[in-house]
Figure (tube, rainbow, N blue to C red):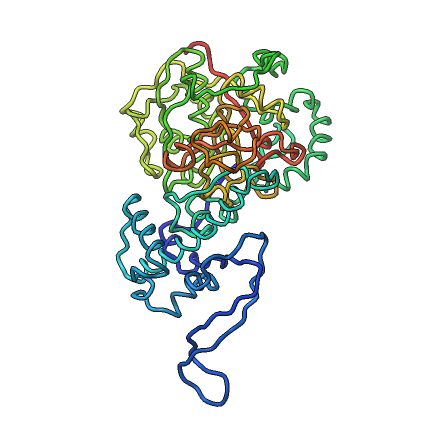
Length: 488
């Protein structure tokens, strides 16, 4: 799985095209008095016209304060073309309360805009996102509703970004080129395909694997050539899964048990695959040795030549690098994150300055079967690298509760599954009282900083009836866990 865009991110973030939000809409007729460049009739000039506009909606939430929110009838960039930045930046636009909230958000997240045009555009984007968040929370607070959202949304570091800009920053959605599908040796070479193609090709692949006499083992273990190289022979499937407990608990939280390092922020580097893989290795090493040390993400970005550094990669490719490489992984402090790939012999130069730690070499890895029971059993043993579809508005502004999402988009983001359980909003002191839906969940550690989600973590829906389609946000489709060597 990879999550890269070929475009340079900074240019994309400043692109006027990226500011084209679809205006937020609501289902009712409204009348607005607008200033127009031409009046109806034979004359021309500036005048006013009363226009009745029908705004379609996909929810029944009321449209409050219409006079204050007329700007929502346009995209932010369109509205800025119709009005000067000074109007939009006024303390009374669209009202004092919202302007004050925007100002406080800028202070909290240390935003500075160097032109009035950029400042006004970001304010309009923030206001559009704010309105969508408010509408979501109104539905969340509908007491007794089992059909409403089970997660909360709130402002965060991405509030002045359109969803398109958000996707570009993290190589999500259309900015992700897809997933690289490894094939067993002698069958075919790995190539870039989409996740939907991977699912469609599932039956054909099973027939191919049966012809290759590998079907029994490869049902749970893909990329068999790497495992054969590591072990010297085909691994026994029962041996690989003998550490799955017979009685899987109802609740598991590796963060609480001390096996998870602090949340990090990948920023403008599309190396979520490396953050996920390193997190899984850190957890496995802690369970084996009792030592929790932050390991070098940058080492994978620089030295794993199968993956594409900040341009994307796959977690099990990272496990294979660590298994094939003869030295192991350095500590994060000795080989720090640089937010980009070091070119021109960067790996050799940086590795000469650090000493790999003991018990950081992967012996083999297991690709988890695409069922909730299999993923639950794997997480009961150790933190597991998983892939998800994370391009939506719910991911951009997730703030709490359980996000329940179908698997109807391409997977585009690597994260770490560190637990599971059952969430009841009535017993959560941090939840907004009077709303939410109880739900089983997977506990996810993300790499978007500790101010995203709940201290950098998310509860993602489990047991929501979409297991056959890949689970919530496709979490079941590409899960893997490393098995560490017992000695160096």
